Length: 330
Image 1 (cartoon, rainbow, N blue to C red):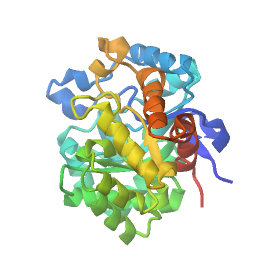
Image 2 (cartoon, one colour):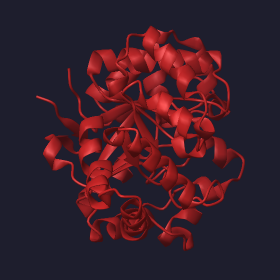
Image 3 (tube, rainbow, N blue to C red):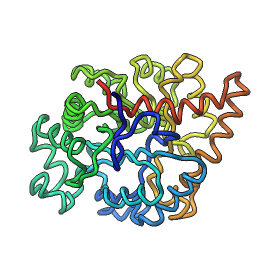
Image 4 (cartoon, rainbow, N blue to C red):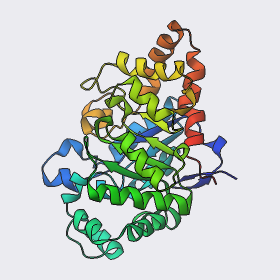
């Protein structure tokens, strides 16, 4: 039977409930820490917990934490937030993108992966299958040596390019997916390279119906979105509230264009809330409650003005589609 794997155990699909499909809760990315970019450090678990509670008060049930090993995870802190709030959290195995790999490896990771100085050195020194074995362990045994298992596997590529090391991690994640049946999530920098990623995934015999592509709204091109959707993959519009990239009208237009073309069952929505200045309880930002409390009413209004059942679409984007996307299935 299909199931979904949270940090606190496996659940049935119908237990998932209202879900944000791409967030970050507690993380201290070494790359940004080394460069003094403190806005990108979510380093106060109590403040993160308060935002998660805001989300829960508005009806939120589950959050997918897309923080990979190279982005400074704090697995025990996130597990504790899940337990204290009752919000289910799905963890992530795998990798991010190559420019982050210049960062120093956390000392506590070295007993698990060897005494490498940087993530790049580690990834470069290992074979695809070695890296796949690491990802498999994080799904089947636990993240970073903890007993808390990942519920998805992730790879990423940079802006308008795929480096050799990124291709290596993509192939490792694809092979870990075949072994574990965990769903795959892709980081696309500014929404680029999804079609090129798709060709590499096909070369690893991955069924694209088990893949979600992140940051699709960073590349607000309806034709491009249609090409990705035709593969059967999920498209994650996870930049809600980031007006510096595009107004909400642009995101909603792209989402409704996919609905018009018959792809409503492949759409996921989230905020990728990965800065202190995005969080309410860190730095007075809009916070994790913004989408569920403020954006959804606007989307429903715009969808209904365009002739759609807005409430039914919200049920798909936040409940039905995540339950299908994040399921482990043969």
